[in-house]
Image 1 (spheres, rainbow, N blue to C red):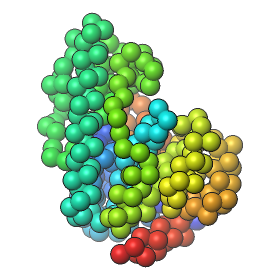
Image 2: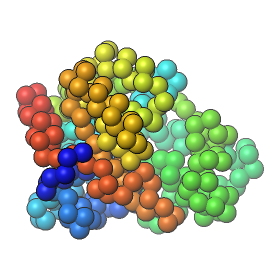
Image 3: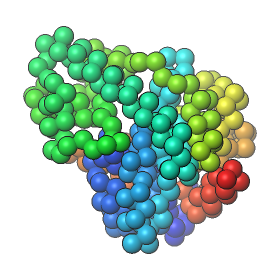
Length: 287
């Protein structure tokens, strides 16, 4: 990545989904890290965006409204990032609420499966481990369950909880039917936003990634990510160039949980102002 003064981390999570910081805290941390801006891309919710926009305006930090939508293709979880959607779009809000309902059902099933394994854990204990009430529009995810497992002594740390129970293929993992990546892209574009394939390197299937590109025609692909090494960055930049996609990037920062930074530190992966401007212009062309 070319180093410029203005850096933008385009993939961050707040406690509106499974991050640890409030949106305001996230914006303040971005300022401390010398970032010009960040995207708020919580899972299946826009609940943290307005607070971040207010704090960003106060501090002079650019906030990119965003969301990360959970989808499924060929038995793999595929995430689609949406930038600059109309956050007041009622149809999008209703659609995201339906996804959170699916996520809630999945949480219930994962808790039940863990109980079948002999682990004494309840949803109330998962919420209690958060240390605060769950607010409207917020969603629970596997990291919250992992936290509770650590608090209950069933895992040493977050990584251990995933490796033993919650990662795909492990005994506590549950997958429910989800929308297809192409549908998520349509939702984002219909709300005036820009659709981007998140962290393609995590799927372990570049054939599937390219098929999604050919069928869905996303606007961009996340080239730079905390779990992408130099080889992945080179490969996905070539893919972006081949299909005329905007090459985006971000840390996927979730905050510090159980003493561990999940994915990467805020600002460790970023794009420069020209990429952000390209995304803005693409979204503006849909309004």
